[in-house]
Structure formats: C-alpha cells, structure tokens
Image 1: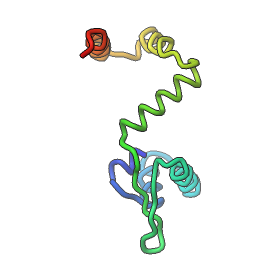
Image 2 (image 1 turned 45 degrees about the vertical axis):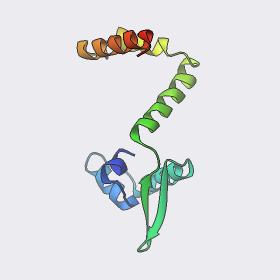
Image 3 (image 1 turned 30 degrees about the vertical axis):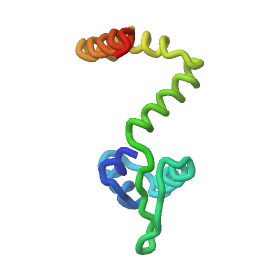
Image 4 (image 1 turned 45 degrees about the horizontal axis):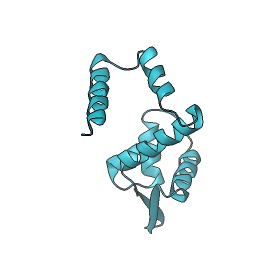
Length: 112
C-alpha cells in the first residue's frame, strides 16, 4: 500500500521491483497480496496494455485507522488501554511523542 500511495498508480511489476530494493520476495507473492487488497476494496484495478494498473481507494489515514481498530479488537478485546500501557512500559514512545499524546488527551477531555 505504501508503494502505491507513493506512486499513485502501479502495476504488480512496479510494486515487486520496489520491494526487491529492500528484500527478496517472489513476484507471485506480490501479485497475490495485491489481489487480496483488491478483493478487500483497498485497491482498484483497470486493464492497460495487457497489465492491471492498481490505485488505492482509501487514504493512508483511513487504512491505518481501520488496521489499528482491528488490531485492538483482535489482540486486546477492543480495549486501547493495554496497548497504550504496553507502549509506555516498553519505552516505545519518545519524550516528544509522549508529550504530544498527553496534549491530545488533554484536548480531548476539554472537548477540542
């Protein structure tokens, strides 16, 4: 998804070659994953010059929001607190990130 967001439109070959720059992956694996994403309506495709060209149907924010919600539901039975506690305890948040989250919480409480 990140590659297609960056490129705006891409073929399986485009995505495959972009992934190959970082790690080895089979072309068929990329093709399968893109087909799954298309079936789930994250991507749409059109035929152009004997190849499917894919583009995203949802913004990065929409996808991340959905994935986080699904993760919290699946792993933490719908409760966000254990996830936040784990991030704080394992020190996955920098001081700046912690302050930003604290500010967001304060603003949410104030109704902003």
